[in-house]
Image (cartoon, rainbow, N blue to C red):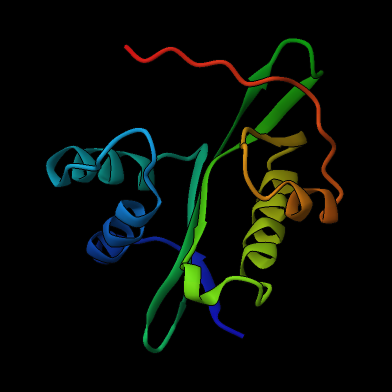
Amino acid sequence: MPLIRRATATDIEDVFELTRRFAMTFRPEFDAFRRAFDHLIAQEDTVLLVIEEPGGLLGYLLGFDHYALASNGRIAWIEEIMVRQDRRREGLGRELMRQFEQWAATRGSKLVALATRRARAFYLSLGYEESAGYFRKLL
């Protein structure tokens, strides 16, 4: 099984390549990506997990946890999860999700949530429930 670990500064180019394949709304620009990447990997309430094997990175998951008023504590949010298209359906996304859930639980999160229009069956198979609509406004 490939290794899952926290991203480090040396992963920036590989994660950027994965992000370029994943991005839908924005076309990632490296300078902006570098600023965000460096900031995110330094935050205590943020985790950027990568999944790798000797040939390189296969995917990543970016998530956060924070306090919310209505949840009686912390909640965790998955912002991005991506597995290379040629490596999907091998359990890699499932393992990234499991590791994130463990991280969130150790921090006291009461739930894990995400917004997506894709992979509905995948999230349902992991025990997630549909909960709310998703709205956005580009600034």
